[in-house]
Length: 475
Image (cartoon, helix red, strand yellow):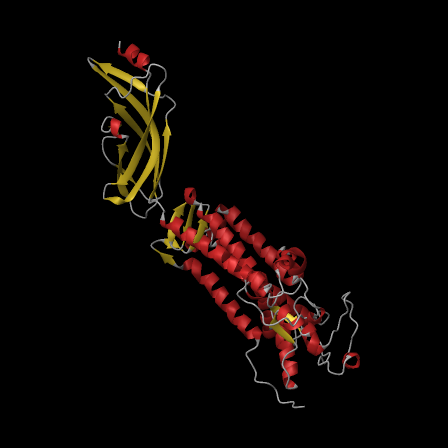
């Protein structure tokens, strides 16, 4: 048997490090990128607005958020159906933070862990030098936790405002109190709770089993080549290479347990599917290295039950379930883009005053007035002057007019402008002896300098009095 190593591929661990670096860079840089005064994503409770894809939306336009949340959750579920807990192993902040603390700070910087391939053995803190190193590790992580907590808040408070507030934190106790508690949680979680968070706290691990199917790709041990180490009751029946070979002389597992010692969630991948597995593929790297020295392919592969365990053929990547998730996500993205494109450049609320109408008369003229309160907000970045038109059914066209205001009014960006509007008519619009008549109208508000693009229509009503009241007041 040849002992020449197989062609070496880049370990999955290094690919994950690249993915972590990209995600971290994007998370830290993205909040600072501003286009036309807007961020890529900013949910500002202070300014009551949402900035998405460098477009600003008022809180009254928050109809986009449910679609964004649906896209996010369906995306995670779709990833799980396709690649197991790939999100946990490759994108989750919890995993990224643990790798930074364990692999970078503890192992590479301080040497608390002698081998990066052994994640089961904790550092010996009975050694005085290690105690000091642990204090240093905690201090380093506390600083990084503050950066991480601040970065999270930058998606709710613009980083430029955050730095201004930082100069006088006593005036912003809620903001920095939140940052403080996030830092405390991250210190406890990453240093003390560790992967137990993934196993016992995170709800995602509890729902993954209902999403998996036999084509879900994940880290899987090949029992046909390596040997069945555990029985149907998940009890370990083969504990060393001698027992493995005694069970079947063709079994290839060397019982080195490299796949066990490297596992961050402390499982034995040879025991089959386990909810603790985060699909980090560390066990694949470990077995690839060991078996490669024997000139054999890894016993642990990124594969599916269909291909590796059940031997029912090749993995079906594009199957109905995956296509369904992709279709729904693409539809939701399309709806979100379409609705985002319908964004109005001003917000207008119309409230009719409590008094339905007023009647004034002079000589042969009777004037009926309706009063309204307009609340207009300019959602653009520059100020504009606004006015409006009254649109009615053809039989009332030109008969309902504007009494107040008589000229356009100025609205500055993001400032709500409250204006009293009075409409009137001098015509006998309808002769109803039974009830007041509610006449539907449309208020078309627009910017004087851009009537085509900066315009909104709002439905309203004009109340015309009952005929006997009209005549009575005229007398």
